[in-house]
Amino acid sequence: MPNRSNDERLRAGESEPVKKRIWRHPEGNFVANSLRSIVQSDRQLAEYNSSMNFSATASVNIDIKDPSLIQMLLGRAEYCDVEAERESIRGRGVLITGAGGSIGRELAIAVARSHPKSLVIVDSAETNLFRIESELSSLLLDVVIRPIVADISRESDVGRIFSEHSIDLVYHAAAYKHVHFAERYSIPVLRTNVLGTEYVARQAAEAGATFILISTDKAEQPTGLLGMSKRLAELITNAHASGGARSFAIRSGNVLGSNGSFLEVVAQSLRSGHQIPVTDMNACRYYLTAHELATLLLRANCVGHSGDIYWLNLGPELSLRELLERLDRWLSTTAHRKAGVKIIGLRPGERLREPILLTCSEPIASGIWLVRHEPAIPFETSAFIRDLGEACKSHNEEHALRVATECLSTWNRGVAFSHSAALCRASSANAIPPGGEAKT
Figure 1 (cartoon, one colour):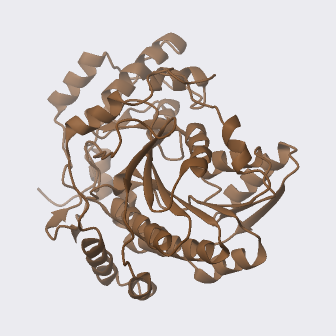
Figure 2 (cartoon, helix red, strand yellow; figure 1 turned 120 degrees about the horizontal axis):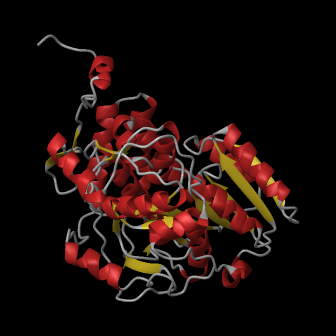
Figure 3 (spheres, one colour; figure 1 turned 90 degrees about the horizontal axis):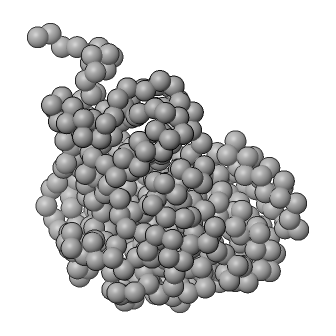
């Protein structure tokens, strides 16, 4: 059969071939980032649709922020109690990087309502920053808002921010976050997620400010570039904690309804009348909303200790099958429609579930779990940052990946690795029960 172009394959309903990248795992073995890239047969797809009563759909508009939809999908009410945490923000100078994103936006609103002395919001995307500044201004709060268009992967930009503003608390949310996209763009990911974290954390330490890294559960036993970059960011955060700064990391699961999230993809698919692309029905994730994440991040500032890694969770993990079943029920009631599904298989860097390791059987505060306290490590960042910076500057992808993986292999040793599904289930059992502490 003659070779066909990607456009011809896509018109025929086939997936675009993906070039696999191999990188060195911290344990030293070479692994493919697309370990679990699964191709589902027509028969399997028919079984899925039949068992879930899915069918093709006409155009349907849904509001992904609709409280009834969110509650139906999560199986619980949205958690929204922030009153007790606002005093930790009052009168302080706060910096939020990545403020134009979904998480940064909700966090900026929560911080602004907590009456800080000043709020510096930073993003590299002018339009997103304009929108969040306009939204904050519309709240008519007595808060000094300082929007700054800057690239945190440029050390000079970060230095200028700290030299021109008095900063007491940093929420570092700026990062590349989409797993399979990270596999394609290793240089921008390493430059932003790793080098950017070092620049911001170092300036925060020199200013005597608290530094809170917003990380991801994908940083545990990383099998893809995104997880690897965020694990390196955690190690950098720990290195500054070892130097005496108040610096710790917060991991979260998937943010329901955030930019590019599964729920947004669902809304776009329904709006266009297309089938919903699903990686794997058995893929499981822990979900919370951007508003819940912002609430817990304010709380973490009250209870967090230097060198710790925390995990935010408000409920049990959910499979895509469960989410789609709940969506189907909601659509049947509100739009009298069914949702069509197309199985596309796990993409490079993705896995069926994220391993969750905890050192506590109960949360240290509502929704906040201690993953571990990492002892002070002699992680000398200067040589690593210099080598990685040079590789990124010259766009030498192979060298950049080698520098990053060798560093991770060296400094990630001694951390217990376990893919125990039982531990994942145990963490779900200890989570806040649906509606247990939620306030509407």
